[in-house]
Length: 296
Image (tube, rainbow, N blue to C red):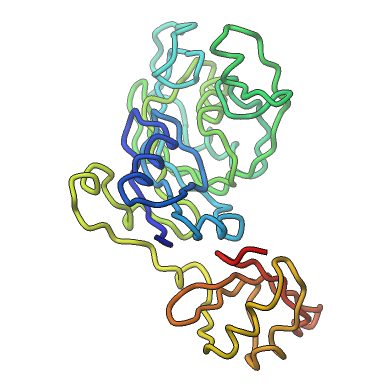
């Protein structure tokens, strides 16, 4: 089953749980995803089955989009409402704060300390494992880019934002830092991923509906990469090559190559993805081959 599917991950489930459930449901031999969501978070989770797992490193998911609801006045150990409350601020009226000015200060380069409850590894161990044991975790600062922040609504102690950020940004940390900026504790009370790269929430499938037997919509490969259909003769030539070998595919198959990544298809079956190299004048040089299923 060489397919890609966008799932709207439900609240309370881990990403790995959802992936494993779908793997079993579809009878796939392997499955993977391209970006973890916390159990608290909902929204876009992209799942790849069988040979499609091999294209994960090639997909462009550099920009993420989230809707986040931030609750002011409390701090938790996980930086979201699933955690243990550590501190509570005095009751405060936030209605006089110019939040447009506040969030503008976070647009651009964003240097921050990641949450201790995170998947970042320390000496080979996930940070959250230390945090669950109550051990102090000293994580180095990270640099991300906040592309844009829009205010959806603003209440007396809650604000809802839409955030576009670079891959790897911890929105829980951003919520904490926004609270700190206005002199308050804060935590995430709701988080939804609206998009990652070309994958959008509007194209997602309801997780429970799939398990109830509803036919899902799979994400078409040609929306990610240009496809080049090759005949049996050219397919035979390519299959004689080795994984990661640099070859002149233009000469080999007699077709012009103009894109950085191309998927070669034979009889509607994806054979391989190529990483194509060009000179400074955008003249084709050669291609590196990565087969989907051929064993080398």
